Length: 103
Image (tube, rainbow, N blue to C red; front, side):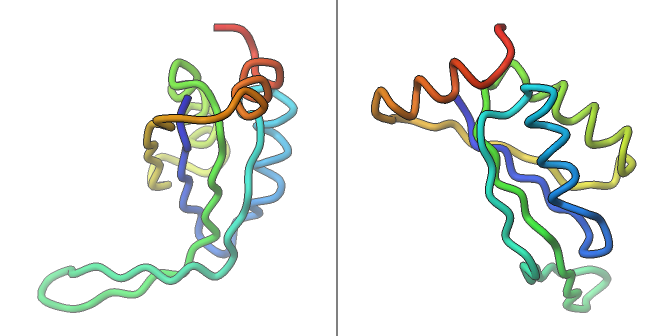
């Protein structure tokens, strides 16, 4: 099980992507953080970006399909990463197992 973090430009429709990923059973659940401000250094300058960050729960084996679908819809420059879910209760585990496609 993993948390998948998708950083969409604020001009993209995060809700639309969440609905698509849910319909395809690639994720079990998700939340959207609007107006997330991110900072990084580029050529000795601080750059600020505003994102809609999707945090979705899924299976690690589905990550390549999540990336593929997201890149097909929004291009290859969408930052995506994931982190493992180290522990959970049975209700959370059941949600992941029953709401996503079998792997």
